[in-house]
Image 1 (cartoon, protein in one colour):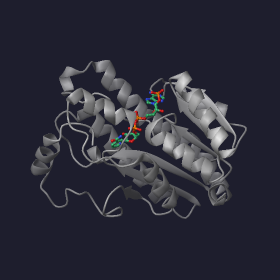
Image 2: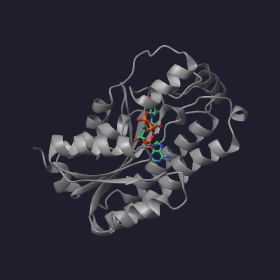
Image 3: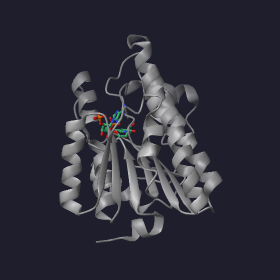
Length: 262
Ligand SMILES: NC(=O)c1ccc[n+]([C@@H]2O[C@H](COP(=O)([O-])OP(=O)(O)OC[C@H]3O[C@@H](n4cnc5c(N)ncnc54)[C@H](OP(=O)(O)O)[C@@H]3O)[C@@H](O)[C@H]2O)c1
């Protein structure tokens, strides 16, 4: 078993949104590299069944915490639940938007919950879990974001805006914490084969097309934790926006043509 991850960063990892999709792949990959994991999600049966699988497959300790990360006290509760262990790696994964729709076709509360989960809770997690990492001089944080962060687009208003927040937060923390022993990675994903993405595509009637494998995504991210600020899934992982030097109007129109989560 490769134990370098826990040796380098600490014995425990947290995956916020860690019961299916990309988060489940992170949990397996972290446990396979010797880390005990704390898994957070809302649906208790899915969470507990997945935790049993991780325990059985990797022989590490697994804690579960059923929380809605869009609720105001969720991250404080997570910090309390993990205050007795050293969290060396924090992956903020939960962030998908199951329903791609025009801004005014969604309830205001739906938008606000998305902002709470994808912005407020991410910032709070970076603050609450980043501070002890910086104090110890070791740790790593992955904020999972999306190609929707590169520019605005129709049916992407709140989702894309929250993902841009996550990207800028990750890059800024990388700049502040580099040299402190704490690695920060903004992980920019494109379409990935997860239950959440299947729900989006089923609802829109779009064909599946080419989807990244979540296990590949998680493995590559863990291999490149020290290669921040940004890791972009695809052909040019440390390059800039694939929209390149396109002017903003053309970029927004291009984003609007693929009007679903990307
Ligand atoms: N899949 C893609 O094609 C794609 C593309 C670009 C970017 N991304 C990004 O990749 C990340 C992972 O995406 P994903 O497709 O795996 O789906 P996701 O819906 O972001 O994540 C699924 C996991 O998060 C949990 N979760 C969702 N909402 C939660 C909440 N409010 N509180 C607590 N846990 C919550 C789910 O469990 P429960 O439902 O039980 O809570 C599940 O464990 C996201 O940040 C997304 O923006 C994905």
